Amino acid sequence: AEPASHPKHDHDHDEATVNLVTLPESATPGHPLRLANEGNGQQACGWIFHRDEIFDRDDLFDYLARLNPVQRVKGIFRCSDDWWLFNRTGNDVSMRVSAYRRDSRLEIITNEALPNWDDVEKSLQNSIVR
Image (tube, rainbow, N blue to C red):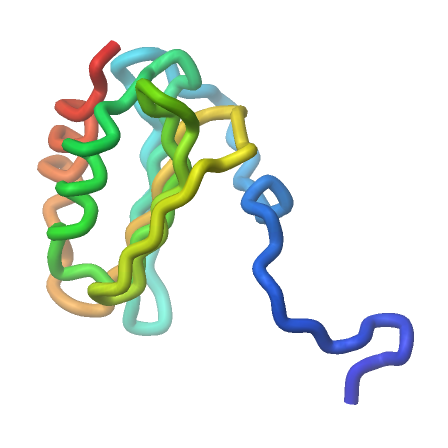
């Protein structure tokens, strides 16, 4: 049972309230931070990009929508026209403008064959327009 002071609720929290990893170093332009881990039959890899790097939204989101094999893709990106949240579970994709402005970041989770993270990172960097 839920405690009375914390009633059960079903809604999405704004992405700015999501627990963010604190790192001892910060990303620099052209050199994103990458963190990979695995557990419970899943592999995950995340990137944090410097806040001044701006992505081509169409190129980036087309790439993330077709990347396989993945179970989940979630990211926030500074694009030419605004900051965008990209969320993909399986083949279901959603995108919306985001209030988050600290940096661009991405997490990919897979429970199948591991993508080549170096190739993924290169493709992500190829979507940066400046």
